[in-house]
Image (cartoon, rainbow, N blue to C red; front, side, top):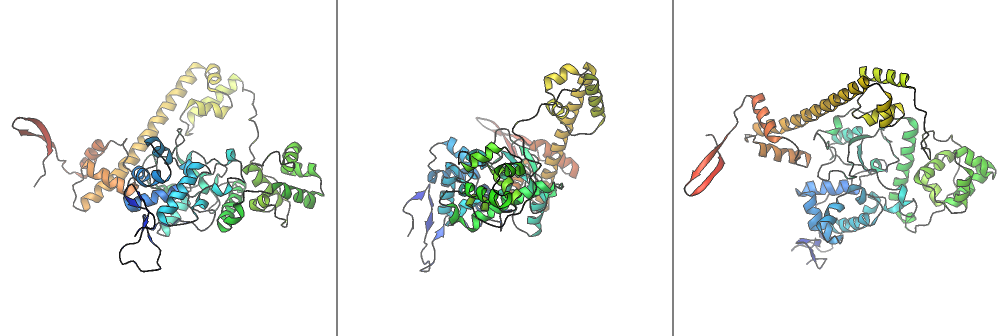
Length: 471
């Protein structure tokens, strides 16, 4: 008998098969795929969990979202199915994240999936500040740890928070695989696979991050850890930031609000607004308060009277407005660009160059000499072509891995077979790869012959194409 009366597009949400032992929980519709992570620094986000469920069932993410998730999430058309695959909505704190949590909890018979999103912080952090970044960021050291411990690679929830720029476990800068200007990650890639080339991201070298960025990431990771350990504390939706600010001002600064604002390097008016509950501190302000007072962000949100110690404020706090630097003289600008033409900086657009020198693109074009501007455009075109050649080379290397693997297993490595093997390894079949050209180059590299297409003559019917299988 079924514990739920209805079927979701032919899929039972949960069922008890014949001969099932009494007292045992019912069998879930999805296989057992547990959320990974043991602390706030490495908790897996909800989107990554869904993507690994798709891989375990050998189903396309769009199809599984349409057949199972969308009916439970009240999505009624194809546009809703596509929007449901936007990872920043699934991991956020809105209606889409709420519906996805409910649907996945029913289909997996698991609880606590809300802690894999920002839903528990919905009433504690302003919504405008809790939106996840649209960049697909990752830490290559974390992916290498996944491979070392022989566990599936997965994305961490902490990586998607826009304020976090470093990995608190390894102290390295978070890298971006590819920024999608549409604000959406390709929903068909498995975690740990490059969106652009299909290569393994665990092999990308890492860079050491500044200590302040690492400390900021650790504070936010401790908040996610607190939400998972004590979720009942964050259910009522009532924060006590005002009580904590009054307590900190009294203990550390003898009740002097002005000294407290000077220590935080914020305006006195902003602190007064916090005390009068007219303005709720953003996630950046909450992190700054916790760091300067030597406590956790959860202590600030819940108004805990813990032991406080003074710490200097962050120097990486973003200013409210970007200061406008005066434009450099034309002679100095021409000399800078002439030196840039001889360097190996990885800059691909004129806008990036204008940002480096502190002016806009139109002013840059009007100021520099015409010969320097022409040489600059030629160099940018060469850099773009060089990057494109590198991307094609990386794609061909991934193609060659599947090509060689199929030949070793005694399977003819046709373009279609290799594409299917790439999909099995990476979780997606890239449509912008030139499989026919790659297949021809691979046969030439391995000195093997490629099977050709010949017309098949049928009486009364037009000629069709058929592959000749060599004996």
